[in-house]
Every structure is written in C-alpha cells, then in structure tokens.
Length: 448
Image (tube, rainbow, N blue to C red; front, side, top):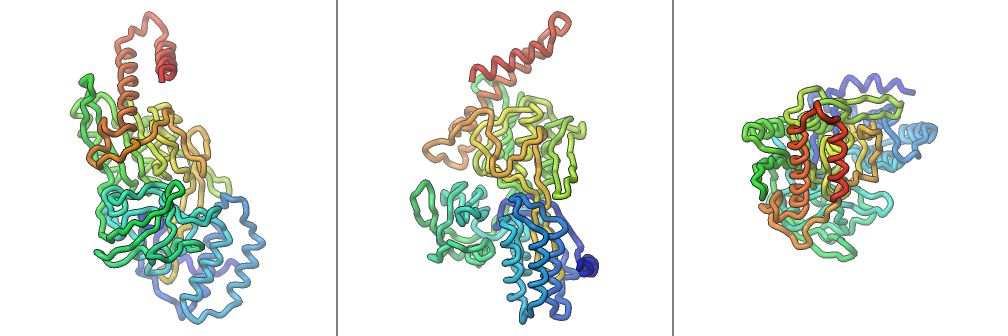
C-alpha cells in the first residue's frame, strides 16, 4: 500500500522546517524543476499528501486514527478526477479530518504566491491569520509593522467576519487568501470583530518589504545606555541582522538590552535557535518531539555575543519562534519577560513540495521550552504583566518611554543592571557570592 511513496520521493527536492503562524506570510522555499503533472495523474498528488501525513503528522488533538486514515485513502483513490480542482478539493477535504489549522494544502498558484524570498518581501496587506476550529473564525495573529493592516490599526486577535462583504463563516484559509490577495494598489474591505464590536477597514494592497531587525541606543534617566533590538519576524535574515546589531551595540558600551518580540508572528525554527544562542551561552534552547517520540535538543553553543542583563518584551502577537526565544531566556534565567501572555503556538511545520508544484505544510513536531513546558494553546506568561497604552501611540514612539510596556521593561532592566554591578564589586573571598546573588534576586522580585 505504501509503494507509491518511493516513486514520489524522487520528485521532492527540498524540505524545510518552519514555524507557521500565518496564511498571508511566512518563509517558504521551493524547487519547481521537477514540478510537472505526470500523465494527468491527480491521484498521485493525493497519495503523496496522504503518505506524508501518514508518515510524519503529529496529532496534537489526539483524534488521528490510522485505521480511519487508511480507509480514507482507499476511498479517495477509488474515485475518478476530471481535473486538478477536483483533486485539490479532495485533498482539502482529506486534511480537514485532521482538525489541525496548520496542516494545509496549497495549489501551485497559491504556493507560488505565498513564497517569501530571503529578502523578506511579500505582497498583500500585512497580516498573519489562523483559523480557530472551535469558533470557526479567522483570527489575526498579528499585523506586520509598517504595512497597510498595521497602519490601519488592525490588532492581534482581531477576528475577520467578512472580506469584501463575503462572510468568512465556514471559509477556509485558502479561500480567504484568494479574496484578500490581489493586484498592488487595489483595495480590500475587511469586517473586523474586536471586543464584541464590529467595524470595517479598507486596506490597499501593497508589496511589502520587511527588515527583520531594527536597533538603537536609548539613554535611561540615570544615564545608562540601553541597547534596544526589535525583531519583527524570524525570516532567513533574522539571525544575521541580530548578530550585526549586537556586535555594533557591544562596541558602544551599552549596559544591558531590551529585546522586543511584540507582535512577532514567528518564522523559521533555525532562526529562533540562532538568535537564542546569541544571548544564551550554555543550556537548552528548545527541544522538539516528533509523533514517534524522537526528541531533538538544541543547546547553546558557547558563542553568545553578550552576557549583559536582558529584558524581553512580549505580547499576544508574540507567537511560535518568538515563544521559543522567550521560553529559552526565561527558563535559563537569562533575563526577564515583560508585557502580556504570548499567543501559544508550540507546533512545528514542515513545508513539502508536491509532484505537480503544489505544496503541503504539515505539523511534524511540537516544541518544549528548556524546562519541558508545552506552551501550545497556553502561551507564556511574562514575569511582569503590563498592558499596552490605553491610547494608541505613534509607531516612532514604540521602544521609547512613551511606550508603557517598554517603560516598565527599562525600569526592570535597570534593576538587573544594578544587581550585576553590585555583584561585580562584591568581594567573593568574604562571603558566599551565590548566596548574595540569590538574595538580591529575591529582593528584586519582592519589590515588583
């Protein structure tokens, strides 16, 4: 029954592990050299999808039964398909049985449209969405900074009720993509539900260029220099851009760092690991667990670029790869988390190229924080919870003391810097240094 998978494998040129939070953005790679339809063999594409799920799918809901999956294969392969659309609809129906919003099929056109190259470019309105299976709503994970959605005030966890007056009730993500995407300069109207109130936003589609990392030096009231880094997305450039920023800030003698991961929807797994290693010298970064119980552990590699005090800003839009970095810093006691509870996506997807140029994102593993915590659907609660400003602030005010969450984060960082300075001045031959450090940390927590 599984013999077809060996025939199909030769056509698959690339396989990338990603952390998907989005249907309108992500980091996809693909090789179309062998992406041709074989003798109108639509069943081969269906069976390819079936084989991948059967072999690699991680069932986070506990509802996947192999016996039922085998029966579904027999049923699908017994049918006749007159064109690719019928076959693709059959694949989508097949995947709906998994009840996993992250395991999705993309036809060749959708697959090609959804690719983002290493420069970090995409076309659209700048939102990441997921489908909530319980409410059947399309939910916005986060708007991307500087995009039409962001500038129009779209927020994390907003629900999309309609697209150009077409109700999204029962609509799958692929259909939503088709409606929201379009020619550059054209307008799409979204009906948004937020806090029980609905309203409309008209967004002009644009080609959006995203720089993953921005950095600057902030001067605290007491004169300390604070290195501020904001990572907007974990694309293929995020690690390099973070490294360049850190090296530059280290030469400018900053006393500590604020790492801003707010509204960062995620991206590449390896990018999140590489960024974590720039702050964490030793210790576990993250572990991934496959459906077969195979556990892979990623650790610090002894090449951290800084050991200075660190505060991480997070919010409801910090998802996936952002949660890996946040969890690693928290569990390794490398720094403090400030803001609001994160989104809660602890699943890893692999992007597969199918034989006809279509694509499949399939959940293949879950990840655990260094302490072994599964944060999927639960998120990470910060050490210090702080709401964002009641009144909106300007984009240029993010990462300044006009930014309430940043302001609290800066105060917390100053406390950590003061502790570090006292420890460095302490005479270790007179008293137990570790005991002193623990007492200082306890006093810090007590004062919050």
